Amino acid sequence: MKLEEYVQELSKRFADNEVYFGHGTENSYDEAVYLVFGVLGLDHNDVIENLSRELTKYELDILERKAEQRIGNHIPVAYIIGEAWFAGFKFFSDTRALIPRSPIAELIENKFEPLLEEHPAKILDLCTGSGCIGIATAKYFKDSQVDISDNDRTCLNLAEKNIAFHGLSGRVRPILSNLFENITDKYDLIICNPPYVSKEEYDDLPNEYSHEPCSGLISEDSGLAVSKRVLYEASEYLSKNGRLVMEVGFSDQELVRCYPSAPFLWLDFDRGGRGVFMLTAVQLAEFFQDLN
Ligand SMILES: C[S@@+](CC[C@H](N)C(=O)[O-])C[C@H]1O[C@@H](n2cnc3c(N)ncnc32)[C@H](O)[C@@H]1O
Image (cartoon, rainbow, N blue to C red):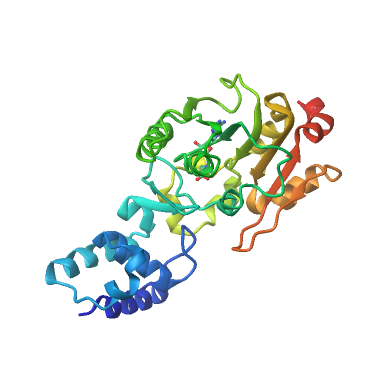
């Protein structure tokens, strides 16, 4: 069987078996390519050449075992193959941290244009998980110092592996911290993708999400407990012209309901995604600091 035929067949099986896409791809064909190329260690740059190659019996057996994990157990591809792509870069991915998929990738690829007033010399990725946001940002801002922090030691272990993989040990510093508790610097840019799913919403999520650590997804207070703490405290950790870019996903409406007059700048994405806003240090100080 040719690889292309197998991909087509697998794509149909994904579609027929209520496999959920949303951890890196958007449709059954892309999901099948992601799994097959990942399992066989094939280069996505040589798609045409690889699609026309014949599969060996050994390869077919391995692919079938992995396909069963995806279809039968609803394990996301990133966890099956141990890697995910984010902002054009490869990251190690396993069940220690959420699978990278934030729309913030698009902002990173555009170097946060036109949101920043000046070059960000110091950047903080708060709630870093696998480290994907901070590490990808460090790749785009080649002379910035980037701190990445999480309150989960196991996440930080994975992030440290990703820092080393990208050769960034001198410029990206992991910090174990419950939000700002162990943060002492001031930053020109704080990027934060915190947990923002309410317990009720979590129960309704597709099976795929049950393989991810729930501490990366669930937050109290209708999903907004962690986000609100960041809003109250961020201004103290930003430089004068600093910016906070934060994702709250589909909790955006609830956030606006809580703070109807807050000057959130909601950002648009070409590749899809929602619920990411920007606030300046001045806006955060004026609007949120006193709520702490
Ligand atoms: C939605 S995940 C985001 C991971 C990563 N930034 C990404 O985009 O893939 C949220 C992360 O926040 C971390 N987290 C949750 N509560 C936290 C807290 N109070 N302080 C620091 N990190 C926290 C979780 O461990 C998890 O890694």
